[in-house]
Amino acid sequence: QVQLVQSGGGLVQAGGSLRLSCAASGSIFSINAMGWYRQAPGKQRELVAAITSGGSTNYADSVKGRFTISRDNAKYTVYLRMNSLKPEDTAVYYCNAEGDSDYGPSFGSWGQGTQVTVSS
Image 1 (cartoon, rainbow, N blue to C red):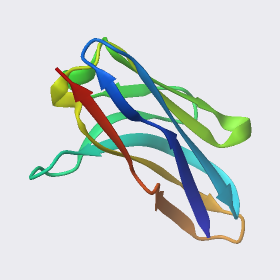
Image 2 (image 1 turned 30 degrees about the vertical axis):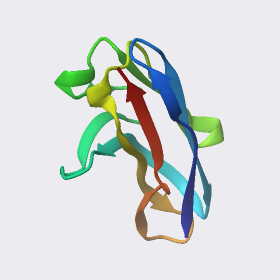
Image 3 (image 1 turned 90 degrees about the horizontal axis):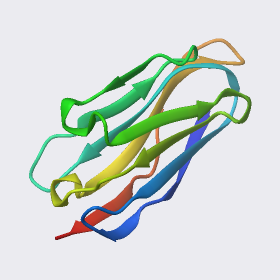
Image 4 (image 1 turned 180 degrees about the vertical axis):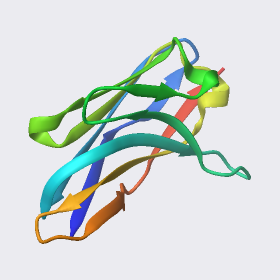
């Protein structure tokens, strides 16, 4: 079983910055893709950014140029640096990891979620 534990987030004024972290632990053989999603009240969960084990990244159009995703493969950790935050970035942010467990089956796990609130 693979667990993801998130940290970071909180309340910030518009234009400010925050960093989210997400560390995976458990029966991990390898992690392929890691990503960040968010869900605002009344809306569906959406992809914010994703990164492969090789470092290729993908961003939602709404965060391009403001958010940066990175990962430390040795620590099974993914980060999301969020700059120039806007009130519309307010949401619960979830990390996700997909890979292979060390006993065979693949896994897909979610973090517990963390609130990001951007005040205007």
